[in-house]
Every structure is written in C-alpha cells, then in structure tokens.
Image 1 (cartoon, one colour):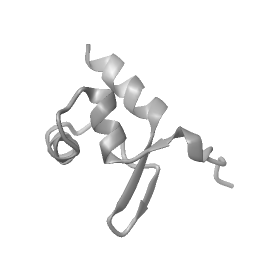
Image 2 (cartoon, one colour):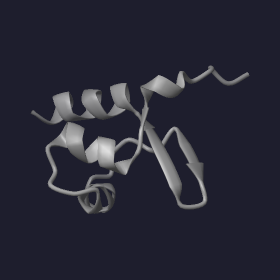
Image 3 (cartoon, one colour):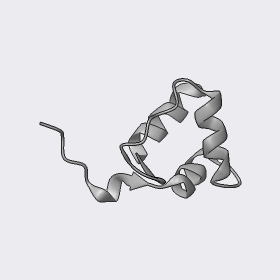
Length: 64
C-alpha cells in the first residue's frame, strides 16, 4: 500500500524552480534532463507534475 501524501508537501514546477533558485519553471525541465538523480515527480498525470518539497530540498542539499 502506498504511503499517503500530504497535499501541502507538494509543489509544481514553479515551486521547484523557487526552491532551486531558478528564474523560471522552464529550468526544471532542463534540470530533469541534465541530472540523472533529479527527483521524479510524486504525482504525474498528463502534463501535471508535482514533487515533494522534501525530495527537492534533499536533492539540492546533496549537490552543495
């Protein structure tokens, strides 16, 4: 059984860009292509992609 996700923990590409300090959400697509270890979205339905904030923050901390 999957672990429940708190909707408040989810961010869209704009939120991911903000956490990473990117100037636009388009940078998230660049990062996804550039870094093999970039976190996968926790939710993906069609064009909607949502990531767990803690996954993005942990990934960023590991890169510094």
